[in-house]
Each structure stands twice: as structure tokens, then as C-alpha cells.
Length: 260
Ligand code: SF4
Image 1 (cartoon, rainbow, N blue to C red):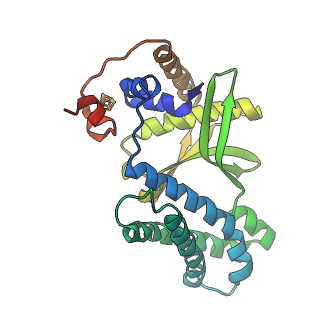
Image 2 (cartoon, protein in one colour):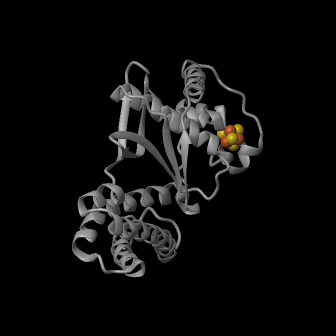
């Protein structure tokens, strides 16, 4: 079966799809491991946010005090998750903890702002819906008919409908087109599964503190299916050309392609 990420990878470089799918080349970079650890922390914090709200946050608290409560809990989760993954993390563990603490301090502040506003305006049961929307993480999805599968970082429910969210831990938006392609693939799979149109999604560049809402137009979905067809050709035996290009500079397969 073809993964949605095979299609977005093709947009980056067709030859990289050949290396991964046919030659079975596997490269795990520190950035990938960081991304995975980040996902685990985020998932755990999301599970606990409502508990923090119920037990520790009072209506009379100001934004700073609310931030402190969320951040205190986040720091515990970060420390435990980093320790559990210490064998996989390259480099100084303390630096990793500090980097994650900085990121989740920003997230705690954002959450506190949103919560304070919501508490001033809505009743408690509505606050849950607004500040802690139902979300499903690491959602695996596949379609035999489309010969397509993938794992969506997060599904967010808005107004009774689910939308895909891609979480990116890179430090650049340089390859946003590739990320939009990936989102389009997930929209196609979600439409197939739930029978309802998915016309938007989100890309959350967590290191840049930027979350973009992306309109997923029909032409983006068509483009995705066309590229998927090109990936199928590689699986059937077509070998794409290896070319030196600007993408090579940022590619984790550089050594495989151009090393001595
Ligand atoms: S190093 Fe260049 S040619 Fe090789 S897979 Fe990466 S982008 Fe493609």
C-alpha cells in the first residue's frame, strides 16, 4: 500500500521514494527522534490538561498563575518522556529538556490566555469544548479502494467534523507545499472513511509557533492523486533519475546519494 508520506516525499524528490521503497534505505536523524519525542509529550499533556483545569485552576487566577499551572504539569511530562527515551536521544539530555521546556512554556501561555478569556465568557461545560477540543492523536487510516494509508498526527473536531493537523518540528517552512500535499492526502482518506467533505486542515510548525489553516481545494486533491500515480510507477519498476539539486543540501539521504 502507498503511504501518504510517499506521495509528499515524491514532491520533494522522486529518487528518494525509490531509495526508501525499493532499495529499503532507512535513515533516522536526530530531528526525527526529536519530532517523535515531541509528539509523545504533546499527546500526554493533552490528556492531562482537563485534569489540571479541574483540580488546580480557579476562576480568580490571572493569566500568569494559570500559565504556571499548565507549565508545571508540562515540565513533569517533558522530564519523564525524555528520560524514557534517553537511549534514543543524541546529545545532551539537559539541552533537549530545556528546548522542550521553552516550547511548552509558549504553549502553556497560549492555553492560559485562551482559558482565561473562555472562563470570563462561557459556562464551564462550554469552556471544555472551546479550550480543550476533542482530538485524536496518531490516527491510522487506510483505504483498500484507494490503495492508500497514513497516520495523521492529530484530528481536531470543529463543529462536529474532523480535520487533519500535521505537526512539524522542523525549523523552516521551506517545504510547506510538500506539507500541504500530505494534508491533501489525509483529507482524501478522511472523506473516504467518514463520507463527508474535508475542505481544510492545519499545519502546526511548533518550533516556529505558527499554526496555519490550509484550505484543501479540489485541485490540491487531484494533484495528490496524480503524484500518487507516479509513485505507483516506481513501485512497478520505474527508476527515477538521480539529480543534484537544491533539495539535496537539506536531504537526510545525501550521504547515500552523493557520499564518497
Ligand atoms: S540527496 Fe538529492 S537526489 Fe538524493 S534523495 Fe536526496 S534530494 Fe534526492
